[in-house]
Length: 124
Image (cartoon, rainbow, N blue to C red; front, side, top):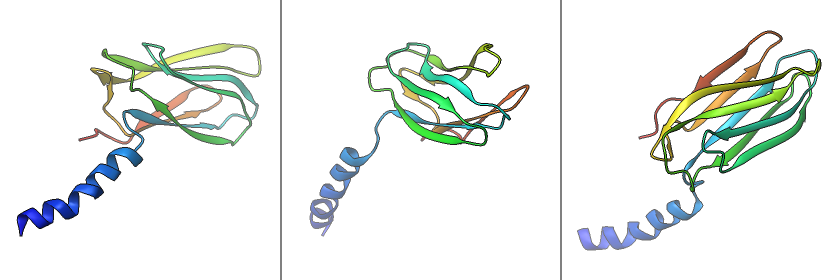
């Protein structure tokens, strides 16, 4: 009986490995400013992969997955962008360890004078 159950479940477990996104983090960003922000980049402190968004209009939100399969060290997440007045900003938030994300997603809300950051909680 257990042997049959193992044989039945094995294909489903293998499929979940292939169809999952793998090691990485979903980056969500929303522009709550009244102006467009440009040159948006999201990466890790190892800077092996980068999400690039040319511009984000007011009230626009984007979600993209940052793969971290090549990451090997501990580090943090970096978000950089340019405001409409030409001011470049970079913020460092969160933490990953041994190249693996500790959270499923990170959400940035860019306001006129601040950036709010939220995480979904640890991946187990």
